[in-house]
Amino acid sequence: MILPRRSLALLASLFLAVVAALPAIAAPSAPPPGFVSLFNGRDLSGWRGGTTYDHRQLLKLPAAERAALIAEWTRSLTELKDGKPHWRVEAGELFNDGFGGYATTERDYGDFELRLEFKLAPGADSGVYLRGVPQVQIWDPTMPDPKGHGYAFGSGGLWNNTKGTPGRDPKVRADRPIGEWNTLRVVMTGSWVSVWLNDQLVVEDVVLENYYDKANKSLTPEKRRPVPARGPIQLQTHGGATTWRNIFIRELPSS
Image 1: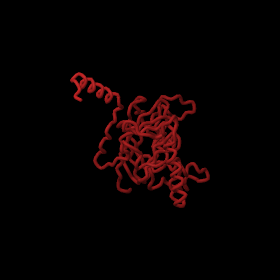
Image 2: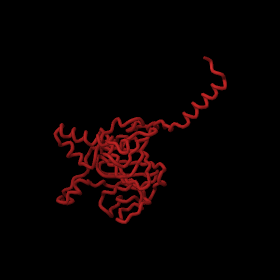
Image 3: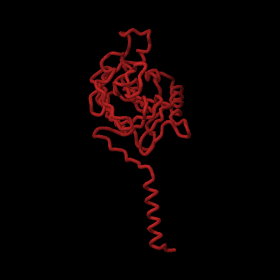
Image 4: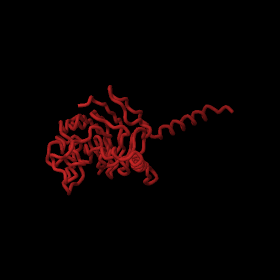
């Protein structure tokens, strides 16, 4: 049956209205020259679950025990809350509701340059683990701070370093308003880290302390080891919703 022109026009209008109502799916940006993308904009390919766990100790476990532990962490990425998984792709972006395991790269990295974008919900607290070591701090700098954590200093500092040392807090507060996208750039060579937040240098050539040895009070400073030479990149969950996109990495010659 041939429809009248008026009916065809009405159908075309309805189709355009439905398409316009669908959420826009942003095409993933191409990596900068020399970089590769860690997130494909569709799913969690290349990522597993993780938590705050010394990567060197993980590698020492028997293969079966290590695989079982990683499988347990990975299951926590997709556990449901209000009918939705903790980690999910929405409109080409990687969303986390603040819970579940940490999104952890399946690959380990040595020296690297990491670039990504993140957007926080009000009150969010997150971070990026480098070689499995906490962390480049990301949080809402406007949160009340009765315990003196340093929210007002802004994001980008190496928060698990010793309090009061250079780089533990960022040089400047460079965060954009909550709900807007921030760009993060991290260069790590050996144990040395530099961080740029929204193109402002906030940490300049600071040694990332080995959190796992530092937390072991029985180890004196001279007995503490440096951070692992290789390890995964981890996107932390800490109770506040965070969205990620354009996650790129460039491996650097070993220092």
